[in-house]
Image (tube, rainbow, N blue to C red; front, side, top):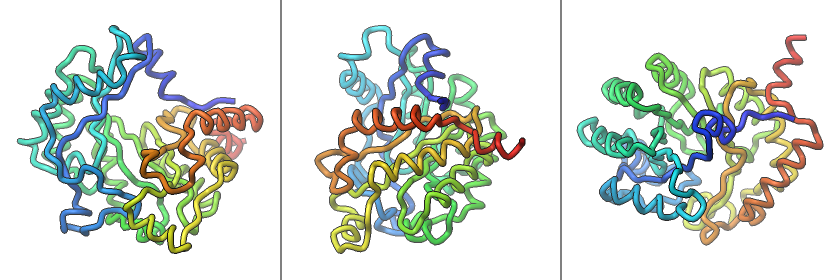
Length: 302
């Protein structure tokens, strides 16, 4: 059994656990401000949309306080701009935010979630300059390679846009992490594995797997409430996840095996709210099924 866990790589590099500190850049999204659309992706609940970001030093302090009990005094951190499209703004506004987030010695890297269609050349060059100071990761929400599902998601860009973004980031030495959603309607386990394989071949450094879950107040919730959407069972999710893990290169770092929404807003599937139980079930299944990352690729070579 083997998968290339982010926690293991960070522990090797920094000698202990590294914690993520969720920060806000105050950015919105072209899928919400009218540029591409106004309702966002179908699964997005818009929580905190368009809210102005507080001072980064205050955000860092508050985020550290939330993990203080388990982190200890010698902890290392990744500054993580998580919600919405964190490169959707001018370099003049964003660069000071990123520089402030990287300033504390205990912050060892910067991770920025964004869309591949929101990476202008000036922004890319700014990120490259920051990357020369401390590692910068860019997280891209691909979710699927299948056009029909992407349209259903209201993703708002085509696959070649993703390809160009990965290439531009890699040319500048910036690590790329790609998000994939499992359980999208109409997608078979084989289709999900095809997306994972594509991500593995894209040049990306890491991958985050998410379960399609339904949050209150989303357009997805209306689909679910109307009976037009079924969510995955835990066994089905694990089966699909195993197939995806086998399709990605051994060196690709797995940043997440599942994603979960806020429990207060979660409508379905309710089993996903118990994250510890879910991860334990995944680990047991991986052991039982002898899951080896990249094994499908290796088998093709023989």
